[in-house]
Length: 462
Image 1 (spheres, rainbow, N blue to C red):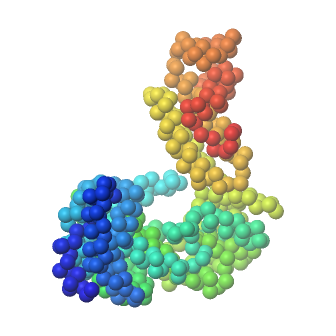
Image 2: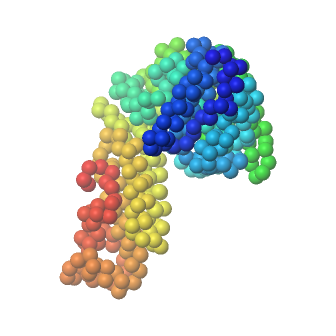
């Protein structure tokens, strides 16, 4: 079916963006929509000059909507929420689809949001697109990712299907164990803010012939940023916050990957974190100098010299991990990652003074399970055991503060079945952190007690 006949059918066939129907009657209606939709969709193009039809494919759009709903996220400049997107698409999708196929769709500016960087080094600027623009970006990203992902380097692990940060760390560990015991740790300064639009579009044009899609991606890049009610133009960079940005970042840095492969280097890249492993410090300095020159002159990006270094891997962190020294190289948690964990636990337990233990435990449990899911990949269980014990000490100290007076503290110890003279701890003038280690609190607020409240362990049954 050609494009003109497809346009004539667009108002007869409404794309169903609602949740899955129930009941026989609704199921019959769903099947009618499915069959009409299949008839109205053009054949999936084999080349790259009709990718926009592939973007607007019904199956692709359903998956994009599912992903946007699953990711949730805040509203953009139009204040439309993710929950409102389905109803909006029911009413307006035919017109939006026509704009996409005609190459006339215009994205709205992104909403500027600033969040603290994990290492405390200032604020990270995010650009939040509207939920409609996120939906369209997601649909574009899915199509392009299917085409581009197989062409990307095996050394690239970030924002790619069936690849993870854990795989990147494990690969780095293998290089170190094989004797490449020096690392060139490259940090690209404000990478997402400095991407050159013309150079990026040139890279995309090498892979995409569809002028409508090229125009749409350029429109997303140039959509502008709204901050304090004012819209400023976007002349460079890809806003962090949109589904398309990670894929475009991989495309930009694929040129770096190819150069490193051409030179025969052993390296691992996760987004803009790139580590190159060599056998000597002298080799590391030579590679640092030449690769920095390549990044600056060829990619038009800037290496952050203050954060980049040639060093032993044990002195650096990579995706939150580091490595032990010696013949048996093990993954360990980087000191900064440990400190961030402790800082978050301190924040939660400080608030325990004014809320119930159940509320505190729910917040702690959610954070600790997520943290364990990532950092449990380390090979130093003694660190996880020590952290779990430290969390329990923080909780004992927090509860001691919550009880406030000697009378209430004695009553709490009685209720916890602390016997005999140990109850006299209630009148101690020692501080909460000291008393958290006391026998009275260790017995009353035991490991089993905290497990009964839902406190998870970071390692086994410690």
